[in-house]
Image (tube, rainbow, N blue to C red; front, side, top):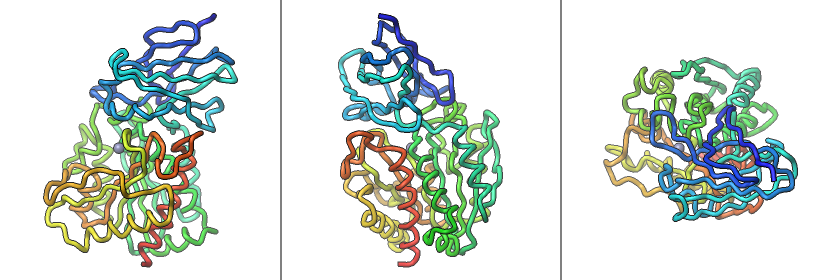
Length: 376
Ligand code: ZN
């Protein structure tokens, strides 16, 4: 039986091949450059048409979120458009934690990833299409340490200043799929929700805050191993120019409402995190967050409020994070939206589980919820 071949030398590729025997491969995930985080994988397998692949990703007890593996099924695509799931099983004992992925491809090429990838090429398509839309402004806010642009879109003429940011954590590709859905809606001037929101608000959008980590195939950090979502209190040109240029712009515009979009490795649900622990929090201020959360919960089965993070105690918030810093610094109603790698348990979909299509729909639902929040 001939050996399969595994490739990773492309945008956001990440896997180390330890051994190959026929259609069985022993693999490991490379750490983010200059950091200890490892969880994102993305690779291509060739030469396995009609044979059952057995792909063993080892060493996962040392990954960033070991709790992410039980109950997780790897994402697989043969056409790079439609992403389904391949049955996967986690064994905590074998080879320091092993995820075994089994899949029989119909064709000779199959792609595997932690979640459906969102390449920098697709990012540039997204930005170009949005920037060419009526009433949409574009600026290059700055650049990353690898010299990639921090792309920034603006639209709308209203008084409420809305900031939407995504992919501070590059392996959380859900976040840019969310952006694609949101922008599809908001650049469609025949859509009544988009029209009304653009009358009420001015939008400031950064669809990818971490292009270097995205291209390098990182889970969580930029080109020098920095977790950008711990840089919002004191961003620097040396370590976190991505955050520095965004926050500098926010200092000019102010922020009334902000959503920072992420993915969570372990929790099988979509949820929001707020800013309960910021200093001197007023009941009215957190009331704005609670009201938005309740509206979104009512509007879509792809959201829930039972599973999520433990809320910070009063005064104990970590102000280095985007959401807490924006709530503290500008008095914004700010929130972190988390989407799963597994499935959204409350409305499970066995074939695709949580998918790019559902990320995009959630982007649209979040905008409809914003309009209701503003007019409620
Ligand atoms: Zn994140």
